[in-house]
Image (cartoon, rainbow, N blue to C red; front, side, top):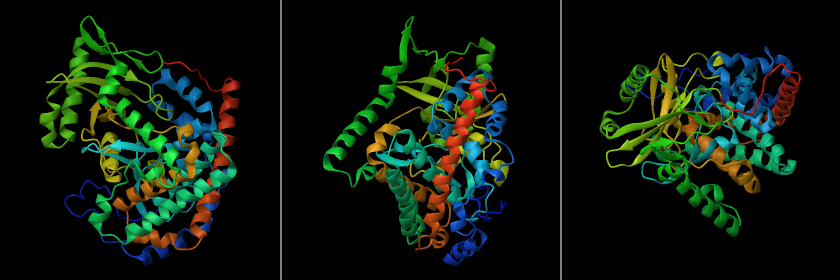
Length: 467
């Protein structure tokens, strides 16, 4: 197994004082040389016998950093389908990817670039943009690992949604082609042109029938309003004894009882470390908000068991804003690629997100409370996350846009010309990625079946309940 990467570190803390990337791997020769290190067709090879630990063992190794009360819920959700399993098993795939030689062409990896981890965000100018959306596992690493996870996810999602194999093949190929075409374009652009490039909300709807596109645009409009701060307040805020509070839900949200002294201690840590993590010009804005209420949340599939808190904040004007604080632990890739350069994993996540996205939440920051790292952000705020059923009707078009968005993110941190040269103009690269994706999708179904069997045998506790 090779873990050698380009010495370019996209997010070194000292990079702002020197230069964003050292002057290496900046020509096509570096990309062609990488082919000798990791032949493109060999990227398709997958052999489960190379595993040093079982898939279930990898999942159980993560239990120590999670809330033990929520572990049964985590396994219940992961066992519900192979798709849910894939979403929760980033650690398993990271270890499996690391068993093979890689290109060594470094980018800021998303780390969990499955197809539903792409969606719409509102820029600070309130324009809806299409981009990667989940960065819990972000870390500098080989560009092709993200692409392999994206294409694998296409096959697993298609099988879960009952989509024909031929359509899944077309969608996975479209993801690779979207990535390749975009990276070739970025290889010819200047640094600022790459950095300023954006993918607007209408791009995923291109090449659709007019009626389908019209219906999809209507859905996007409704969802953006529903998932605004105002829409979220209508859904989640209740009034008790004249005080606005976040409504509880036995599965999703609960209030945490703290003594007055503990509450003061916790929030002193939150705001002291958070204010130190954001640009000085935002401190005045944040200072206009006061906390009304806090609940602990359960979110997602892979994140179940991580400590997540939702804060209801009120501005001086009476405006309500929700801030989410989510636990950040070591990326699942650090075991194989080396530790993050950041001492706070919340900072690893927030810096990686800003590096990969064209526009990020202005409130993105990080904190440390009682020795636990978190990153903070606005909750929802026009974030539109598609479901498998929503994209099933235009999976190839959506996958192609995801590939292009991933290339954009990689081009911002890596070297497009070297990556483009490694990919080349022939079929070898795509064949390798797609062969791996098909093989690893089959492995995911097998691993999911093993988890279901372990639950049935009583070896793993699973329950669809909250605390």
